[in-house]
Length: 251
Image 1 (cartoon, rainbow, N blue to C red):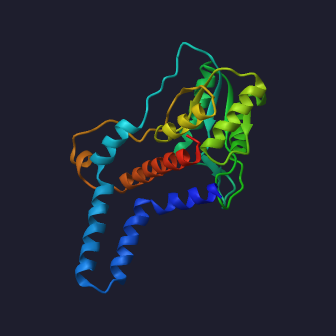
Image 2: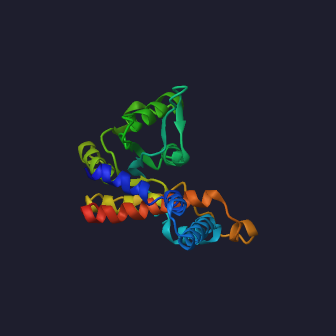
Image 3: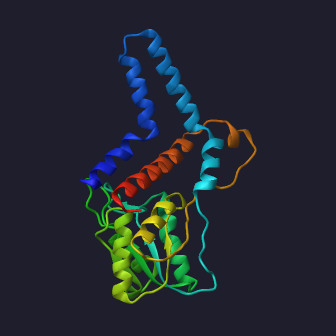
């Protein structure tokens, strides 16, 4: 039940849904004064969520830095899912914005900093049962020449807390003691909290960050951009996730 409720809540707190909801409400109310206020509110929220400076400053403090020890060789690199699937039309593998999670795991393996790649993630979708970790392992073996024995997968976890639970099981079963955990920078706070909750001590190595420094051009400061709304979607999703997880005792 918690799994389904978390998906519904994530949808409801989306900036796009909030703005559309206010606009729809403005269309159905009968009072002109209230309608005008609702329209002004929706415009104000649109300008707020699309502003580059506001979201960039929040991300600057939200996204943590890596504490990976470059002089250490870790037993494992734990790569959290949420970066790939299979295209329904062509059947080909399709990578999303979080693909840096997988490529960074591969890079650290190639550099000799991790011995084993653990890919944690079954299906986090309400309607699609595709096991993402299976796709990722197949990709690494068939396209990147990574030995089968190097890649261990978790195919059952559906959310970040379960990623931590299943990763701990894998490490204990395989006798692995040290690890870095790789996920998107905007997702790292929730992920790190879950790993600490289950008693799995890992160094963190965030990738795929949304904050890339603060520029001083008009487009960096005040010109609206719809990509900033996407960044808000991710940030609000994570904040809601942390709150829900705390209520559940997951974080």
